[in-house]
Image (tube, rainbow, N blue to C red; front, top):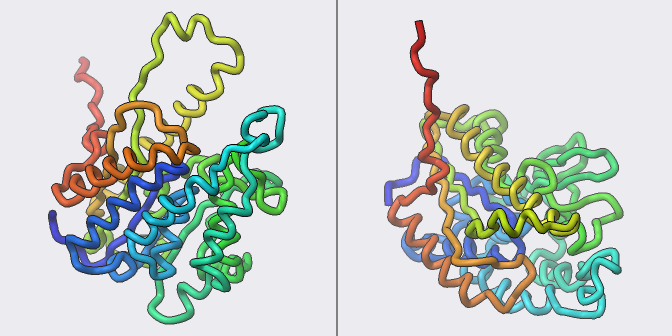
Length: 313
């Protein structure tokens, strides 16, 4: 693995229970460097399940502890009940209380400002979508004018993780930060590093971790038979994957001096974001992602180069 530069940042995608993958990969990186993540990264950005991982690191958890959180609480958070069985006849599939209790057991009493104004400063950026104002909010430790420094960490993580239809909105307005363009927050991290923290891109490494890419299995004969409700999953998936790759291209284009490393693993099938039975398989993919980090095996989306228009007279 190439050495990191002076300043090191981490960005983690959303993906529900697939957060098992990057959490396991981070544990492998920590084992290789013989350092906890909170000593490696001084800027963390995470959306949805990525906010759980990023906030966990900022709180002082090891990668293995975060991975264990998914293993222990996955079946509790995504417990099948009448609510999930009869969805979409219910407003949402899972209550937030089990996730809130799991977060409170590890982050209780902390507010966002604690990460910057207490002890060794760490910048933590958590994208949250505000349905009332129809905009993405970037909750972080030192945005004093909007009071984000006083947001409880648990509230910020819950809001960023509240995927519409899976969980109810927090305070009736805040939902998953991936609803906008920031399911992959690597551009958020790159911008924060250079223009907010003032880091020199030539002295900065940004590690971006995905939660697994599912294969494309749709065929024309299937699509021709779609009813209206069949379009929901593939269209949302297309928006998400296109947005993820777009963020990678934005970082590549506008931060050329940055040591940017995007890592993503290809899954072998469909992995629903709320299926805890897939945790063992996802852990194996996490091992694979960790080895990709150590081998500097960046994602194919990062290697795409723009082609210039052909010469014409």
